Image (tube, rainbow, N blue to C red; front, side):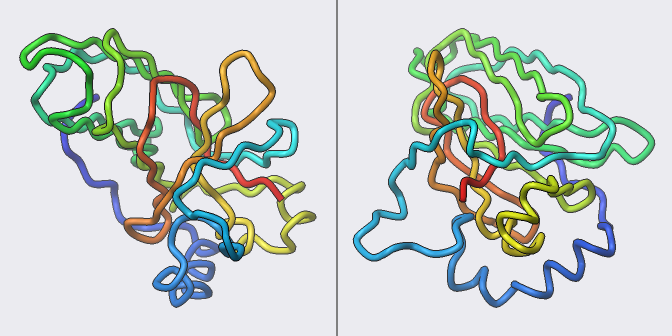
Length: 204
């Protein structure tokens, strides 16, 4: 499924409570982190052991795999949706005019495979990614904090504040937590440095 889209309205009652609880904090500390330690660059990529990461789960019907051919130099948004009956937006991949290191007008084939049971996806592309690619995960409806998250953070709200988009490092047991922001509540966005595997996660 492709094109520019907006997700259906409505969210679980638990999410409404969470959104109200920290709407003020979002205005001061967006970026998916609880706090920024003194001397730490909030725009830096943070490497953590993959085993320590707590990945955000989803209880919704899984999105389908998607294959699209784009044109380098032409902006495009690819929308992934949960399955019926609600077809809620799961994630959006935004490709700006500088999304690929390829000649303008060149066809670029991308393949997206959502990862089962979690907010994550595998992205492959026939041309290297440049600076103009971003992913926005949307979890208003099917946010599901693992039991381990509640033990580590004490509440869903604190776990959510710690979330970031992470890229699983190929051939290693590390997760690179990318600088992440919240364009609106219940959305988490990051620019993608390259194709690969991405998940929404926090690391205590």
